[in-house]
Amino acid sequence: MTEHSDLSPKKLRNILGHFATGLTVVTASTKHGPAGFTCQSFSSLSLEPALVTFSPSRTSSTWPLLREAARFTVNILPAEHQHLAAQFARSGADKFAGVIHSPSPLGNPVLDQALAWVDCELHQEYDGGDHTIVVGAVRALSARAGAEPLLFYKGEYVGVRSRAGALESVA
Image (cartoon, rainbow, N blue to C red):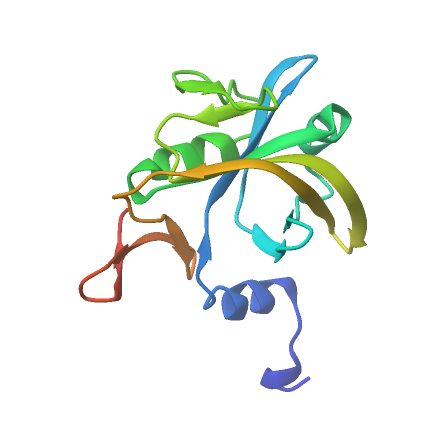
């Protein structure tokens, strides 16, 4: 196999890591209490109708709880909240310990100081290999001014310096 045809998971992660993504925490109020997970695959899908998408891993123990709730909020994280990205990526811990949040219009947790949030109802799911492709129908959304986004680039958290237009490490 040549270097260019190596499609191993390690090679894919390394090469595709060159694409900077935003970091979100997808949350919901479930019958077991608030639940959420870190997700970097969030994207706008359609303006009319208003749809967004993200792709949780098939091994996620949190996505089935959110699926059952049939509604969720995507919290877009600002640069100063990389600790939340790490906290909500853990398994088996109380992910909401010490996290200030308030209810969205659909009753889901909106994380305090989120850069923006998008409240959704589950619209559709599709097979995405080792992930599930989730489509959410947007029902409410909001953003705050004066904050920079948290990005993930080449395996590290990075921020954006608006004036210089360059990526900077926030680790």
